[in-house]
Length: 536
Image (tube, rainbow, N blue to C red; front, side, top):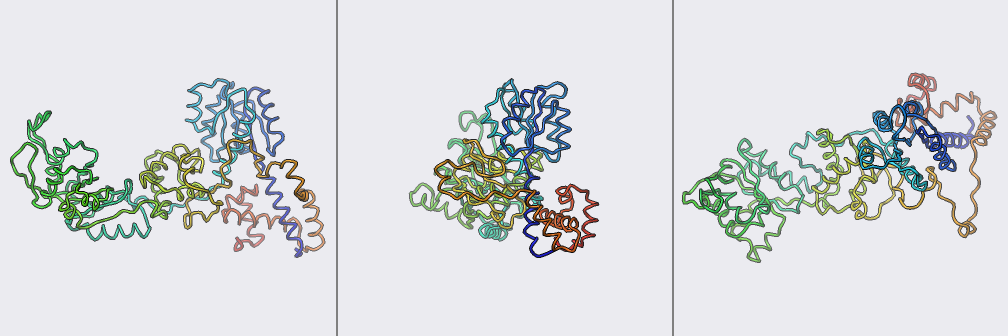
């Protein structure tokens, strides 16, 4: 083919691709007037409109035409809207489904969302809302359809202790755990709330020589001051009101094992004194008792408070502080190790999937970028809660920006331009093709062409040339190829189309054959015929 015809071929293929991506909307309603009124709403937009008068007909149309959005009436003769919805949700290429009803009850809303509808509309329609809802559904469908093949970046089985992170800060934590786990040294774990202090304590226990003995965790901040001594050391019958019998405390129960005292900075001075004695002498007395009880426990303590400052202010015993602070492990906040967020997110999703609590497997780059920019005052605990909430609300197998809590989106700062490089080295994320639409104004066409400017601004700009039509592009392409090419015009065009489809799908022949509208066997024959094996 001659050198000059490449641009015309590019133009023709681009026009063909663009035209094939015209959004398809299916309207399923047994009321002809409803179908007609919705068709009129969409008539000025670049949509392909299909209609069906029953659930059975609509289901067949979806399987045949693969529409992007389905408007589905709830009450119809034959198969109901909710029954049709359940069938549609079982398809591989699921459309976004908007239910329509004249009976807006609480049960309707709950059932619609329970079975996976994108949203629902009340009759009679607010046409501006119809347009906004359609644009949002088309964007969500496009985002989910464009997800890349899922390839996990971690295996949750490799993180049985639940501590995830490859950052330099976390690698330092892992090294210290490995160095101290096999000894009986007392350890003080510090860090903000939600950084995983109890997980680290359990990890130390699991790798220690006491791993086959008891492990007891006590949250000192959660126990009332008048009960914490009884909880830790036990009590005798009649020691205080309500002590109807003798009770063994945590130190007694945990003999030979490991006790973890979380939030030890909230412990009262009298209890601090007793803890000091246990550490120094290995013995204690029950509340109300006189018998000395010996115990052999390894102590791991944790706090999110500044113990050094508390020692200076005389609110924490200095001698106890030095007894606790033999080996200190400081856990970094999540904002100090943002590079670990993709792995933490995937770990949470894998846990949900294993527990059959969610079908979500991935997060879009734009959503991940929001998560990476947020400061996470609640640290890993807050991240885990956000992922669980978003996975429950997600309508596909990927978490999109719209699924994240509004406060996370608002407080994450300005969003940079979305690119595949948003999360370096993370192949598990999905792709969102557009930013989140503004919910207030009526959106423009799905093709992304901006709405026309007002008269004042239009007079200040030079009108762009009219875009070439498909017919013009093929006229130019045909004349040039006929004049300059020594090959079959059809062969040349077919070879280029196949090559572009293969490159676009990353060499995936199943997807490429779907784009081209041919069988996989035919595609394989064409690859051999045109010697394309090593070109994609």
